[in-house]
Image (cartoon, rainbow, N blue to C red; front, side, top):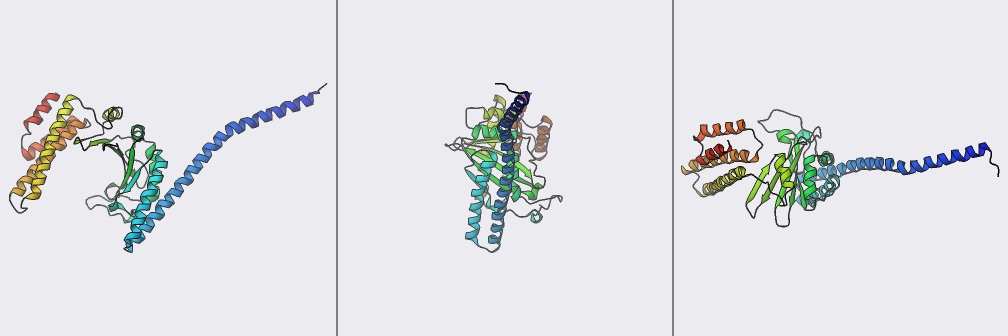
Length: 328
């Protein structure tokens, strides 16, 4: 059968169009899917913001009217919705969410009372921006490495309103093991810019109540070593830092003893001033040792703290001087 050139050209053109259409179907769906996800994410964020804002407004009304039962219902509703929104925004399972009662309901930025000893600064509304902050936290490296190790454990989100201090809002994450060990990290969001102010910083705190163990650090190497350690949460220390940590723990135990003693004596007796002075001394030493063990402070800062101690209490204890000598 003879096929003329126009017919061949027509078939060829149709084929090219079909291939192009299929290609657009295959690749176009991906592009469309991404756009839909972005659009859906945005609408979800707006919807979540409205949900939290509405709950907060209702809580304010019930609190103002002294309707405790209805207020408690809104508090529980806020906790439950925060848990769902945080799980979705952070991409991990948040098993519990908590807005400390002392901070709920969240007041408007214009009504936040700035501490008297602080210079005036701008404070903005917070509740409708919580979904934005959670999505920004998800991008932080500290969150990603924290989630990588602890996403299979129970994780609690807790929120603290710190706007009266520096216009920021606190987001804490606590992972807990079945035997009660815990790992904690946190982030802060500027209430006006929505910037995560410690986005590039690192913080990890490990606690084991049964072993009376507690250690926190902002040192990246320590955190990286901990998150790669087989233990649930422990900061591996070299011999010198372990000695510093052990000495600090001894002083902390002594300070606890003096605090208990202070509670049991007559508050009008002369002994009270002596006990308080000793508690202050132990506290200064304990803070100094924490700085030394954390490995995140320069020697000149530690030296300045030692001078401050010397000015108030005289020469530092021999144990501390020995540790400083060992470090040289």
